[in-house]
Image (cartoon, rainbow, N blue to C red):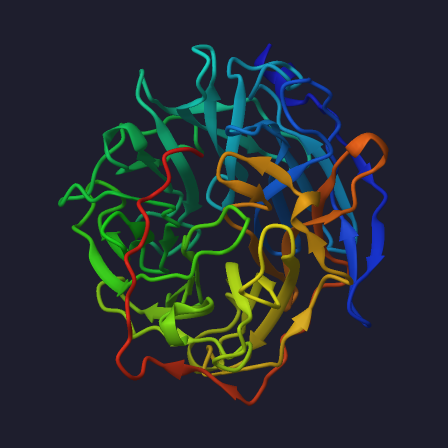
Length: 482
């Protein structure tokens, strides 16, 4: 029975890429689209993508068919096995009642992708959602696996059940360094929203078949949006948005047997982005030598917190972190609002020659309103570990109106996060693009990447450190819905 299900190709087929022109010289490829028709969610919508690469393979995952009050009809995947030249797509089996075969949960959210080199398995973790009581709650964390390069997927294994509580925002990573003492360990992070966003970690050492009971850190830290990383020596570093209005991190040096107390990376202060659902969640990646990079949206460099920049902090051990550096996408005072970063570091590079790619959304005018904001996607890169940066490339050919985006209880949505991955030395950002609704108001919001990948360009724009007397406005409480 299980073997039959494992081979199920639910909605899976080779994808004929739809190519759209963006900035001259940049073409975008649509990776997936929403096939579902249930009347309870908004359709022709895909939001919140993550991606991961290993060798020539890139796997992306995204919510499909977004509900207004949380979650989606299913998680869609798109896989390339030839460095992004061609893609296949499908939808995970066994997740929700809308999946094929159907699963036990009402909705699903927050996909995260990783690869387990020791067991030769691709993995996608998700937040399983129940809405049987009339209110959507995060009922558990689940993981689907693929043993054939991300082209078909097994039904999910349950990592943890909320048992009447409320989970949120999972993230997944595996230790893929063969010399690590914990090679083949995979780690999932989430938080218990119903317990004040208490952060939890679970570990698997058997290819995701079984998972340890969730553990808190030694200081019982609370927060949201952790993105675990694994250094070549097996140390796990987990940056996250702390409940105390800071970007923080914690570590494990014993393969997930225990988790150390958290340290502050930096205070967190951000400009409230008009009309769109977003929080200053960190985007985290690691270079080939184990240096961690964490990016988030922050207004500390802008007079009066008038707009967000993207800032970056780095660490070689997860315990001590550099002061936040402003990525020089635009001049200070430009009034351009930058948010929802997706950072990547080419693991074939490291140190002062690390290749870093950064995608993000932006408004050309930070003072816009829900009715007037024009949403675009930008990209910059660095060939020297973030010391200097290229000029910005806009990846969208025209700006998006917020009315073109799916609605949520927290504003219009492209995702709480986006992602960038490297393949064959090129960067492949995955992000959501919307076009004007069709007849009858049908939305057109789908998952895209750059058709040929993006070369990593050096530049002369220098990152800037914190300066002057920075004003730190009070940050809002972490959200209470996914």
